[in-house]
Length: 260
Image 1 (cartoon, rainbow, N blue to C red):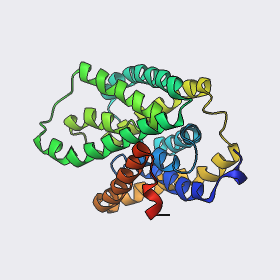
Image 2 (cartoon, rainbow, N blue to C red):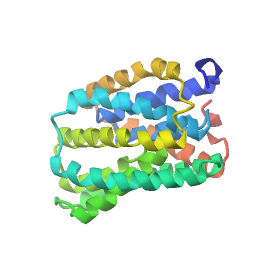
Image 3 (cartoon, rainbow, N blue to C red):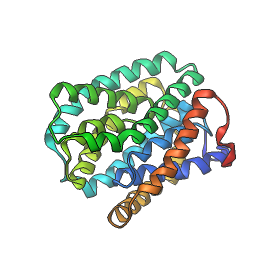
Image 4 (tube, rainbow, N blue to C red):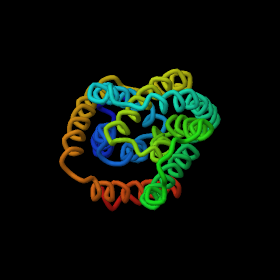
């Protein structure tokens, strides 16, 4: 689909989606980038949405790496990244199995969105009861492979990564840097599966070029906001929209029509 063929709704969804990627990569908002894929699937088919967002994610990674490239936990990366490859492979097989059914893929993405909202609601309780510790290698394998799986399906690998990193109670800069390094590698590893699934065939280069500057703007805005403001209320608004979007994808009903 060329840039002139996208409906108006696409731009209403794509602009905030790409900005959310940047904000999330910069550490402002707790995994809010997960909203991007469900939001974009409201305007275009899900296979086109995930294919278009991958190159934009990689561009966002580059801008985030410039700021966080020296701040990461090496042990966590060494454990999570190899296991993520297993999850990417499983995601590839599932996508290949259901790629012919847009409804089935939408349903899976909706479930992931709703699970993320549930995770964020319970996150404060988990954090309060959690003692500082280093997760085991087995836990790393489980969370890492889950990251790769959900990231392949919906660019939504954040929650499993957070569940692995939270018990370590890393410094915020180290925490964000570790997720930036990890997902930059994961997104690059997703390129071959996306290519073989044909998800990159419909990507319009002009559209990527138009949206790409928003990735930089989102990262810079996220760094600015992260240093000066709490993300509490911003997160609540995003999660409310994500909840409605997730329900829409699961139920197949246009619940977001109240916003547009």
